[in-house]
Image (cartoon, rainbow, N blue to C red):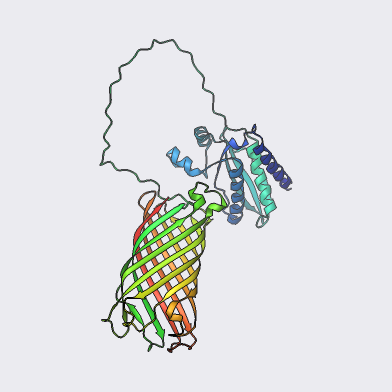
Length: 437
């Protein structure tokens, strides 16, 4: 029969709140480690319950990350199969009160949640508590299962380091020793140095700044094809600067909701570009291109190694020709609202992959959409982007980028020229470096 743990959960919540107001209560000093849940038969339920319990532990105890124990211990710890010796050893070394885990098993159409909380004194699992539910657990059921974990932790006392016994020995006369000066050792330049861990799972930098040199190609095509159009003479090298800043995360407040909001700025300036008419490839004209993008970002963690980042911003792209009488084609000056999203994934602790999609809602397109040429037009744009980064150090990575964007025009035949539609396409490949902090 199911016990009324929901009421007990709210009692615990009230007790935690009162404890934070009383300076004499040392509840927050308990150090706890959250273990992986054994929930292969109910992965979604296990993820939901574990996430709720994780928030409770972070808010009410001193939460210790498993990766810190791995790094400090120096050897790999199997957190899914802890032995009493390992629990006692790690608890003593890091003052851990409890290792918090659980398992969810499917039994005859129902799911059974069982606590697995290890005591620092014995290294053994304290008496397990069980809870039965069906299907996806509700919020009430999740709280009731969390109450079992809280009760198990509160039933054990806080970790207390063993007292050192002082042994009185014979009094020995102090002899002043002559200390010889020791020259510092010269470091061996040939000794291999192990690089630091490149990427911490589920953590992204508070600031990113990258400089990429890329090749840009562009083509503007009209329908019907009898209309004049122009293309790039060859891929042209262009520097591109990209910066992403998360102010609250940079200030040190990485756990709050506000730390997930950031600002994005990117700019590209290409002063030495060439374009040519469709029917005269030798008649090239110098072209200047400038891109500016700015926006608001929100990064949302998904699992251990993935972040989803929606964006809302402004995108501008302008083209100008040194000789306007060479190309019988209007100049372009896009200004658009950028609605998009990016996804970031950590790979093998040394690399990162980012991909994104944007939908551009143009506010204007320059001469191309003016009455002097083709009249008013309907216009939309799409953008795709991809980045692969490889860590050289903790803060520096090499990046390879790919960007594709396309603007599609549909004319209304009210201009001085006749054209049904046009497509303006861009391809960019880049190689550069990015700083992370």
